[in-house]
Length: 120
Image (cartoon, rainbow, N blue to C red):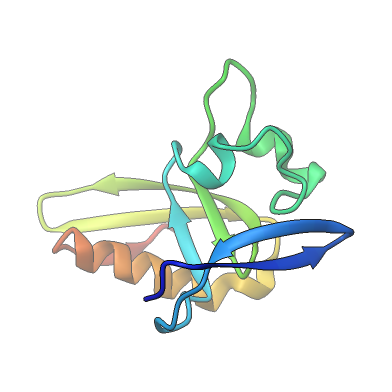
């Protein structure tokens, strides 16, 4: 990877990011409750639809674990750990992301070295 920065102008604002030649990011990612994408910025409008804001931050300063699909937060998720399995439940605002989110949940289970179950 390169250490130089690149810029993009989106919505009239100049945004900076690291220039990389790595493989593209997954289509969906399960983010923890304390993730810099949401915690690190006061203005979350670029990634979070205002209609989802209360689901992600119900008050009291705590954020829910979030589902990132593409460049937007599309819902929340939770997990239940068993000795050999993990159940992942999602509450998605955008149903189109279901296949990508299932792939992300399977990657999470593999990371934990557990079998994956989808919540019903």
